[in-house]
Image: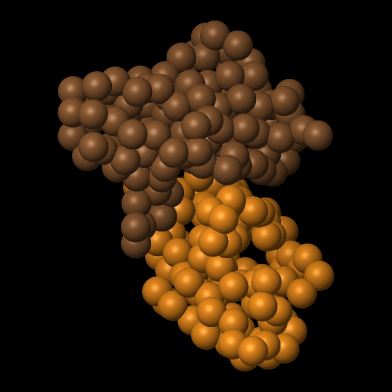
Length: 116
Length: 114
């Protein structure tokens, strides 16, 4: 079974600094998708960034970027120029190939605190 | 505005009672999902449906039931067989074609047992 591991229960970052959140996953598939979702105190899940496994180029969305290491099965999220609004729980999620259904497997999450 | 709505925001269940959580979407998505979130854990899949009148069990389906009579609606019933229903419940939807079929989430329902 696929599993997703987020080894950092909590992280802190100073406003305007950079922070990296870790995620590793376990799969025997070669074609899959990876996502980072943000859950602020409102508890609304918000998509941050996504990565297709067949693409070697790391995805980037404004201040958010990923370091996708397929061989190592690692998918870390880098947040640059951290802002107070970035404070939230961040979840890494894995989606298997389509024939297994569009199901997401989530990690346990990392709480990110931003200090002013 | 297109989106996913869940109601109610808070729901209280008495012992032995079945309760139903509503999820509606106007994104014209074929697929819909129910997840449960417990403190310190990630989301876990309860049920999902990729087309009307069809649905599949997820990882923790015991004590839950669903129906998918309309494309826009995917209600979740928490039955009396679910012994520990207190949790935050999230509904999501996605397309089933194109890539990468990103799931979009509703605002959630908090279920508490009296």
